[in-house]
Length: 127
Image 1 (cartoon, rainbow, N blue to C red):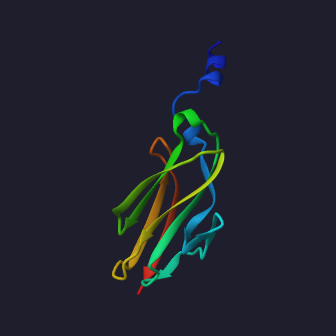
Image 2 (tube, rainbow, N blue to C red):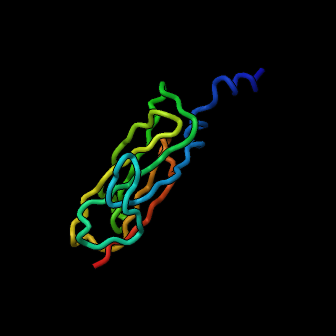
Image 3 (cartoon, one colour):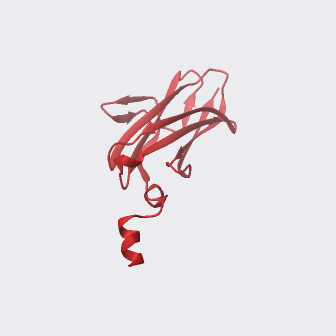
């Protein structure tokens, strides 16, 4: 009887732990819901970069499914945004203006609704 209860009402975090990202990364533009200019190294005059994330996994509308993009420059958090996930296969993105003096290591952590890291996208801004 306990097993049936778990199947009907899974414990908190079960669905979030199953979220995964595919076809995702850092890019220079988003066109027709696709990442354009994907890479890991960009020039200091890039202007703006996007973190495109396609999330797949169980979807529960009543749980307010979402992911969080956290942009870091040299291990300092620069920007955080919560993005809704509205289907079991959902693409979403955030963007960040990169100033010419912000050269060096960057990364974006993608967090599930429980705050667990499901992907990390590292990139470098060169002189």
